[in-house]
Image (cartoon, rainbow, N blue to C red; front, side):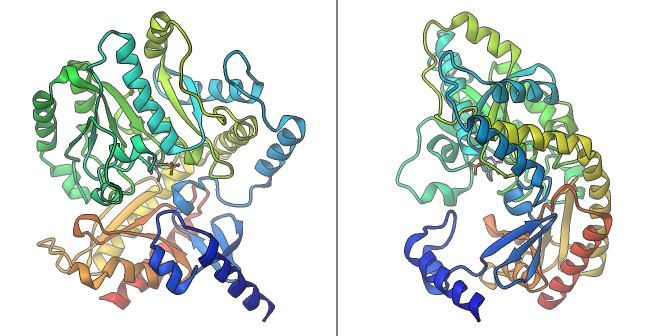
Length: 453
Ligand code: PLP
């Protein structure tokens, strides 16, 4: 009774005072929050009513090491008590940011060795975009300012990051965006067989766009190694390498947005490692602290850094109050230590093999399931009215949403993606998941899909 009272009190306050991120304002007013979570342990989240859910999305693809790791709370507490905050502007510095920057330089591929800190993914991408333009301006080529992105890309919601996002809904909510953004097609492969057979016409299309815009007007190409929020799109082998070569040919900087794919999510420390590509800048956030505290970063190649050193004449007029927040950096260091000590990247690779097997069985068992795919613990499947012809369900049926609701009834949180009329179910459990937990997730999928078929 007491809990019920508390939930209805919180629900009323929520409606009145809390504007939720990426949510339906109307629905919030009609029904209030459906779930109010109070506790997290391992891959589980506990709701105020006492019900326990599997966090099948690692919340927002970020709680990589799972919930409730007290070591992270302890280092945050220690750092807060010692020196919660001090500035990193100008000539001020502190050990947590220095140590984390060094650690990131060791973890990231190639010569990505120099780190600029932010508080999250959008800030990282905005910073990378601005730094790319800054770089070209310093090099005497201010006309190189366009940012080439891709359709269905998701790079965040700050002005530059939204502008680089290629999902129309995010553009339509506002009357204008930042200028000088262009969009190339994404490989748009939604199943393993598509990935294998895909013809790489999107690469030719991209070249055409570059030629039309004028290569000398393009500062950078930004891409997620695997497109997440736009539909969990894994590129065909060869795509990333081809894009690296195209960027080199036209002198365009390559920015890899590893905000979802970083820190072990795909069974490698970073997504680009699957295709052996090193970008000029890498943006990270989310898994860097497993969501325990906000933090992000842009990691630059030595080459770019060296040129910035040689060409810059005064202050770099770009820095956030929380660039290199000491407490956040300490949490990041401890989080990375856990990922390394507990072999979570290898665990993810192994669990990914099991997830792939489970999804294959799901596809065999259910006529509506197709387009299964995953890299490590980043996966998805599609729901089709007819898998053979890839005929989709009428969007008004809301099939993906119904499957997700059936999963929720069975205490599994996953996410529907319905852009471009798709019915995609995304899955990204914490990297600590066990074989049994992966089996349980797939078994819930099967029960949930049965209800809809
Ligand atoms: N980039 C990618 C690939 C993302 O998935 C996200 C968030 O989901 C972002 C950028 C934005 O990050 P944030 O929400 O921390 O600003």
